Image 1 (cartoon, rainbow, N blue to C red):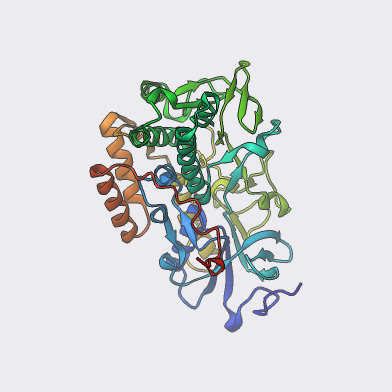
Image 2 (cartoon, helix red, strand yellow):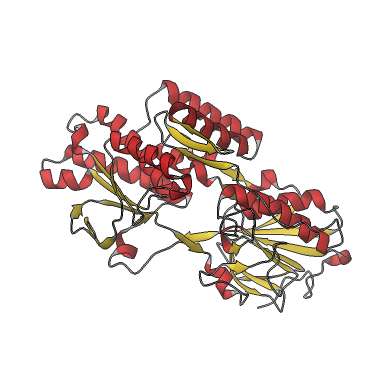
Length: 442
């Protein structure tokens, strides 16, 4: 298929170079944003390829799923943030490093082939699905906004159906929710959704608090080990005090349509099984033919350039970024590290085009913040531990300050204010948008 007609060598009309950024998450969006500031308008054309026209602020996805925040308020429109970057909606399916091309599949129409002079790979990660019988067929993920909205609608639907049923076994299945993966996503998801279901029970006369069961399981000996022993124990104690069953050193052996079997032999009847146990780099990295480690992460140097390819850069979940400030010698795949990697990556891309000097990456994390809902949280900021209400307030404050754009901060702040004085919304909106309105005749 033909390449874009801007020139097969990747150089734009007028002699401008093209910088192609793949991925609109924390790494990709902020790299493009910093490039706009570092490159003069006539120095290069910046393109960003992403499946959606927004960046999802993933740390607030659990609150969006629980209805504390309006779902559209946790996404940032890329066109509002990136003023000089040309946005290409589509999924990057292949990269030819030697030919300097990238194949993109748009939502509609034929594939396109984009040429480039500098390439930045930040496509993020995808959920890791191990070969557990029934997992791929029956598990629900929790990584994207559609998955978060679906899960909220599904949980509310289970309460509705359980309240309407006279079958005790069916009520048990529908009121039992199992989440596997006690990292940040799984822990915050359980915390938020357990509070949602507890408060929602006031509207279901046929259900009692003891009817609802939440299970959080993980193979690790503790939840969120990155927090450190004491804060992790406080987080686990908070969940257990609310009635959440935290099952550690426990594996999933098999998943059925309405049950899950654990390594201790227990078979839990449930219609809701959520898998948040780990991610893996986007397969695009492995398909690109570039050097990777055994986990599929691109190998880069301290300047975030892919080894052996001075015109290709990578960051975020896709890359194994060396960082001597970290105990393991590599930057962890967190949002705050991606933000700093993006700044360094943009500086080095600009330097490769003759604008500025190269910078090496080094960053010591500011801390970790976990919102456990219901005015509880655990935070380690600059080595100082905060728990309870102070931890909850600090976690929310941090996310509010790091949310891109002032308008999104205002919207989220208003959402939180409304949530403080009003009950949780339990309307299920799962059917909206599924049917073409032109097909309705009534």
